[in-house]
Length: 175
Length: 108
Image (cartoon, rainbow over all chains, first blue to last red; front, side, top):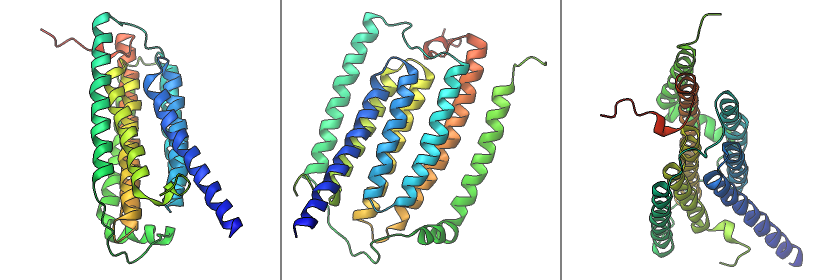
């Protein structure tokens, strides 16, 4: 009994750490004035979210989160910063500072309202016919039930890649 | 519900997802560059994905559906990010700036 209590406490502690990492990363990504710090905060937040996915019984999503978001999207954002500029300090006036404070107040009100809704709603538990989804289940669902969406998304990705190459090439002088 | 078994309840995940969404929403208003807005948009998408997976773990009869939709969101986010970053590169080549306020040629 003692050992199971210890395991509960340890797992709760790791969950709290992952939640804190997620929120801290989001905080850095939002409020940092240097874009490279914003992108690093985003990567940190995504690592924390991968941990939360583990706690939600979806290890495959945790892996995909690390591979796609941290490994691809954050790195791509950092590459673009090297090609463009990475500071955000231009054009801060008193007007924009006032608007930022107003935006902060509005967003805090929105957060308070949403958290109030989460806390006061009742979440009825439905009848579940499986409690855990294996990678095999996900693959079967992806190709059988959501097969059309799967194919459409691969088409969208192809078009997006071609479009990105075309857009980034235009206006470039011939070497 | 004690502080150690929070991970087996729905509400903590929903609150984290709300915080991610609100940080992203505020970031879009607060950042002045296109790249900063893209980063905030990714935060919003992350909040939505966490919401979907949390509901699929605790509420939905089939635990697979939320995970599949989160995979779709990841694919669409990758496509969106690549397009936006290509636009940013082109914009920097033409205007030598990535600030959103420089894009005002249509202003009367």
